[in-house]
Image (cartoon, rainbow, N blue to C red; front, top):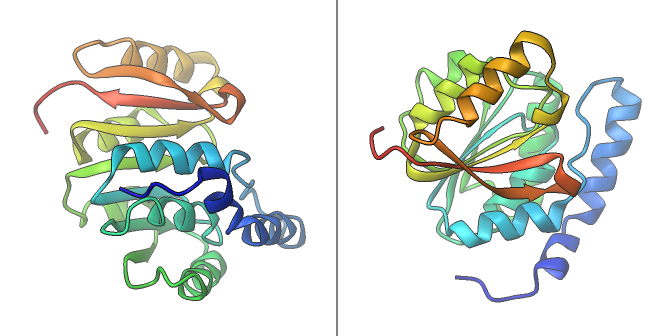
Length: 194
């Protein structure tokens, strides 16, 4: 397990975080930058994951953080935007992480259909996830695996009720805490079946 300083390790990717923010503004896309790189790195490092899944790569900032959490980690990350896919691959190559991170181009559901689990850690930081996406992530996580899920606080209406009910099911999930000033939840899969 890495024992170096989380803040300085996360700072290694600060230029990429700034580039991602500039890209979003230039590109006019909705790839908002994750605001708590150190928190994400700390959560991932605590898991010591061998297999990581990320939904929403953007230009690769969070993929770099997650893949750098554990030297033996292998990662799959999925992105729909072809411009983002190309930029993410370039950025992962520049960070020396390309051999351990596979960037898949396509729809989450389509790509996940061909990716076998289980994963030790899954990360989602897009807009509010649907219940069907959370159910699919549950299937792909190993027993006791960790889901790091952003923007649940933005859910509303029927989707909010469905997500609240899902994450309140103690036989399936346990909330371990939050990062990113409470905007991102750390949620543990509690059921032993996959």
